[in-house]
Image (cartoon, rainbow, N blue to C red):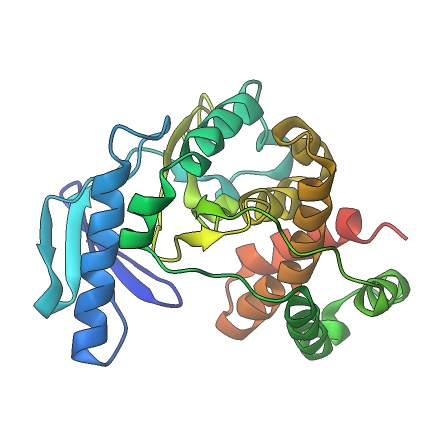
Length: 260
């Protein structure tokens, strides 16, 4: 049996089945989280163009749901030069087009609104940077501090159904062929700015991926902003938990996020 633990969930894998437990301590809130995630996954089946987990057992009162394990390895575990194979951007773009076109009326029945004022994103980034600045190369301090004092982008004019945490730790690939095999962890799905689903891919994979995924200049500007804001959170998480993958990936990303 294999175990993984994240911020909000613990997952166990046995005999090809994933059992995912919510860590929320309050029983009623925990049950609602489980129901919500199961409903999201059920609604996505047959809608998006990349496989997502399909629940076979949902036990809200016990705080877990179960689904067959999708094949593949998280993209975050592959060496950086191997992370963007031919066709990757095309598949992700098609996936996000379908996801972002999900009917908002139905989405409102499944997820909540998750939109922060742009200033709050920057305030959070300032706090998180202060906590990790001593782990950031000194030559990057100037560009980072410039960003943290610069004006923020305009707020989004359109909101859509988003994965809302689409980093490379949640994209599965075949480690041999590097074909995408799944998108996992939908616990944070929400009605949000579409740029948020480009932001972590830009953060994790570099500027060229954003140009391949999105043509709208305003969306791309917000994606860059969110990507820069979220890197400090990931770095802090890696340092606090001892997860070297997060530290390594975040440290590498700082180089292209804040080029000077």
